[in-house]
Image 1 (cartoon, helix red, strand yellow):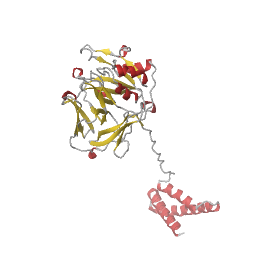
Image 2 (image 1 turned 90 degrees about the vertical axis):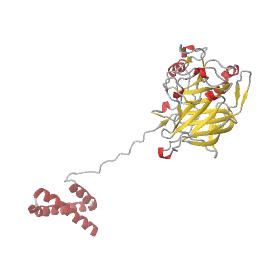
Image 3 (image 1 turned 180 degrees about the horizontal axis):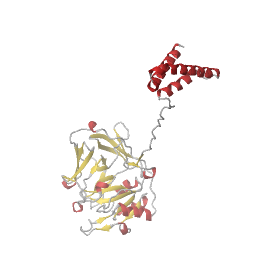
Image 4 (image 1 turned 90 degrees about the horizontal axis):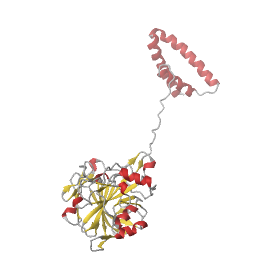
Length: 379
């Protein structure tokens, strides 16, 4: 009861202050008398009708505190959690579920000196690099259908192991011919075979270069091929991604990766940039740029060590893409020792750290450098 009367006392102090401000000090006691009488009758009425005085008191006090107006606490609406969608291929944020797994285009790009500078490589979402023959590397550049690469190439012939990687994503595969072994094996793969020899409308020859280093395509033409051929996308097991570290958590020193594929013209370097948390690509000692001047950069670099052997007089290779082996993963300025695993044909190759946990990558472009076992990699 003492607590209740203290509240009554507090209420009357509030009332006195409120009426003094309106009517002045002289009239306030008369007003307070009639107010107290009114309050007594009201309290008696609520008591008679079994309404708790505490409820009445709180309502009256609230009304007086806000100038006599009825007021309710402001409604605080819980923030709506907008669902975030990430693309399966590279972890990029997209604005709808329908864009999580778009059609994918795998393009065979040559890397011989006469083909440089290349086109559209900087725009690729995922790139595989491996030796085709005689120490010369070729690229399997994978693009999403919503990519805007206006010129990709020069496009060249395929090899069996590039088919293995393209099949992991059920991609449309753009190329120009291939080795006898690759062409024989083509029907066995779950990919859309877009060979320029039979689909020239989706490619063009540039007059600025000599053949065979002048064949190009674009994501616009490849989208037309998917539509015209009614190709359906394949569901594949997505890569695992993580948040990038804050800038103060990144190493500040300029670390560089060097991969010696064969000859000096095919020596690859990747220099880490702490501010961007990515790697700038070097080739033959120079920064690699596309024909339009765009630098080639990547968020993640994977070095995959594989068994490789020469299979013919031309120097073509056989690469074991199924099984497991050692791998090095470079991200956030760090070097992660691990292993690659691919159980059977069509599976996505996965990369694990030394503890057996699948490695989580930064969202963005990834390059996979496929090299023979024993290749020297400096960091």
